[in-house]
Structures are given as C-alpha cells and as structure tokens.
Length: 325
View (cartoon, rainbow, N blue to C red):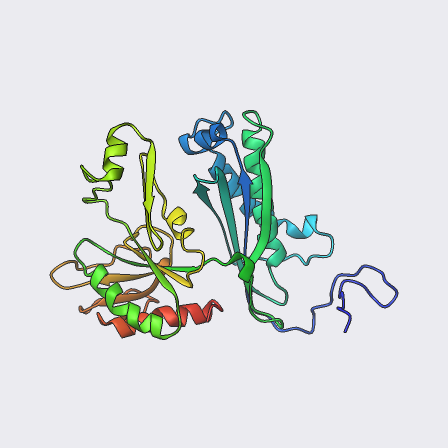
C-alpha cells in the first residue's frame, strides 16, 4: 500500500491536519543532533572564553524558545502549549563535538516530534553563531528523532540512534546507594534490561595509581591516556568529566543507573535511612520514590522500603510510563 501523506487534501492542496476529533493524550519526544567543532572552539566552550559569552547557556535557552515557536517556522504544525521542555548538552571530547538533546512533553491531540527536532536544530545553530568568529568550518549533523510516545502511532524508538534511560540512586554519604543498586540489578536484568552503572565518587578516587602504565604516562605529562582489552577500557585525563559523556559510552544499554547525583535533574530514588539522615535533600520534582525506614513523607512522592525488588519495580514502572518497556 502506498504511504498516505495526511498534509494533503484530495486535490493535492497542503492542509493542516484536522485533530479536533482526537482526545488529548500524554505526548513525549526526544531528539538529538551534533555539531563538530575545532579544538579551539571546544576549549572556548568548556573554558567559557567565547567572546559572545556562555555558549551552552545561550544555546539552551535558544533551543527551548524555538520549541515554543515551532508552528511559526513549520507551516503545517499545530501551535502547542508545551508542559515541559529541556535542552541538554554532552561534550564529546574524543569526537571534538557537542551533542544536543531536546525533550518535549505535553498532553495534546498531536505529537511534539517537530518541537523536539526544532529545539535541537536551533540550539546547534546558536552554538555555531556563538563560535563562528573562532572557526567557520563547524559542521552540524545527525539531527534525528530518538524516541516518541503517545498518540495513535504509539511508541517509536529509533534503534539506529539508541540512547539509554537514566535513573539516579541518590542520598547522602553512607546511605546505602551501592548496596541498593546491587540488590536492584538482578530484578532489572531478569526483566530483560541491559543495565549499566555510573558511580560518582568525589571523596577519594585514584584514577591513575603510581606505578601503573596510565600512572606513568600521566606523571610524565600526558593530558590523557587510555588502556583497554577486549571487554573493558579505562580513560584517565586531566579535565572534568560529566556524567552525560559517560552515559554515552553505553549506547547499547537500556538503562543507566547513576550512583549519587542528588542535586541533579535526573529522575531518581532517594535513600533516607535511620542513623544516617533524617530528611530528604533532593528536589521532590525529580523523585520517583523515597527509599526510607523512617516515618518520613514527601508530598506527592511514594515511599518504599530499602528493598532491591521494590526499588527495581519503581524503575520498571517509570520505564513503562516513558514507553521504554
């Protein structure tokens, strides 16, 4: 059967699709794209030395604004009142590139794929504009829809550009984050998920111990070094690493569990346990559940016991709600 283009009427005239008979549903779309830059541009972005100011900060705002103006740019798009929109960036040091990701949500009669794609496009164009005085050979590429949910067509995952879901397991020091993640993993893998973990440890972390090959190279003045075998690798370098760059190392994972990140915007489980802490410190808007053995509540947030199966079920329910299961 020939595919039907619903933006044309019987006479071939362009039309805005009539969605008046549809019922509003929860809609979600995620889009990504890259801009390949020179090392000088990347240094200016990460070092905040670009003449026009905070490159990623301005690009983030530009992308969010663009999602809200999509119908003014794409002729047959419906004007939509978004309920949520984020634009986030990952510095890809090895590629000398910046990855942009836009997520758009709303309850409506039509989807938000074009809004997410427009947000990514304008964010990347803004990076170009902010940095063109340094280098005009920057290349924008790979703009694509990663994921969408809601509506008649249901869930779509772009398997050619897979990105994992991310959930943080957070809490103050010694709250049992490592133990809980270890208890959750068998239940998550039993559900068929390929799960990776990323741990943030700012207390004591010797990345390149004295006497090891990487340590010898770094002591001799290397900016960065890597060692690998067939199954694993380790990269040590002298500048900061963001969790999004580490998440990008697991493109085939279904889920990445972050240990820590209590002040981040990632969806999270927060541990509040007797003898360790007495109150929640995370933003309630980011919490999937409170894991606690105390008589403690956070408005609008379910409480569960310190139990791997219970915590894993919260994550599985979240993934189902996001259309990832």
